Amino acid sequence: MPLEIVRNDITKMKVDAIVNAANESLLGGGGVDGAIHRAAGSGLLAECRTLGGCKTGKAKITGGYNVPAKYVIHTVGPIYNDGKHGEKALLESCYRESLALAKEHQCETVAFPLISSGVYGYPKDQALKVAIDVISDFLLENEMTVYIVIFDKAAYKISEKLISDIAEYIDDNYVDEHTDYSRERIRMNALPPMAPRTRKKKSDIDSFKMCDCKAMLAEDDLDAKLKQIDESFSQMLLRKIDEKGMTDAECYKKANIDRKLFSKIRSDVHYKPSKPTALAFAISLELSLAETEDMLRKAGFALSHSNKFDIIIEYFISKGNYNIFEINEALFAFDQSLLGA
Image 1: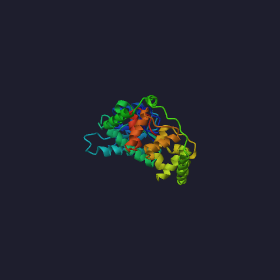
Image 2: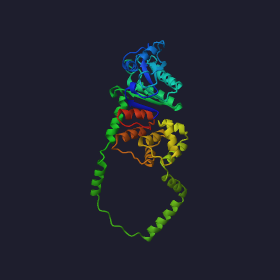
Image 3: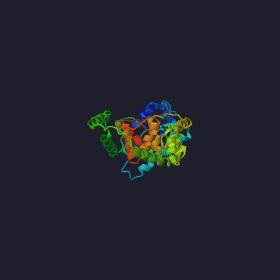
Image 4: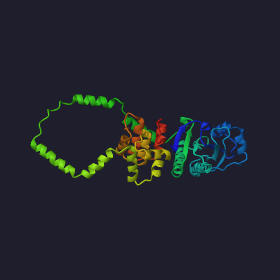
């Protein structure tokens, strides 16, 4: 998927470029900066000495040396004071400048740490929001795969209120997979026996025929609905894109799906997507819960209250929040699969 949050060691990422949260000297330091310099070796330090440092909010590029990445992009994040001294604008600039350098050097894959969120003290939930906002805006106009790399889950934090609200929603809606069946069986056993069938009177039959005739007046609507029953997932997706007045690119980028996969879905009428992919398109199209269920059925899936992943998706749809990157933040926090391909 174009933007993905992963738990990994950034020095071991096999990507075209990794981003280093550097200091202004570019000569190494603690945290991610020190780890990248140690992994890359003395060649990196020697090249950095030729660059003359780097200002806060700017970025410079070097070779990768002993790390798997071809390039290391060095950017200097702001030290957080109170959020009223231009910290947000400087942090946004770090991501924009780094992405511009990656594009200039024809990088297809880039991995970022959460810049400024360590010793520089930028609140982690705010730092993550800045990263996702800037990267997702960039990806709307560019083809690239970008990773936000979290080394330690304990270092990852999103809004406490959001976590609390989702946890409460899960508690209110989560059911054991056997609960519904057990309750239904008890309910059915408690029902009184069914009354015996009675033969229909002629007047009943005549009334039925009259209703049947009236129903035929809506034959055009019925024909349209019957055609939709036989739609494949691919056909329904393309129809919904047209109905929403979206372009293909707008749809797959909002869905956090890469262009190659979308092309495959478009060209294969019988394509069967994974559940996260199907849901990603439903989110991109801003479908209601009922419409989302319809789209899932076309792919052979359904939402279930015995699945926390499904309940989290339902929570965001019920709140009218269709920002796939915010949804993925929450899914990551709850150790669930992310939306996209």
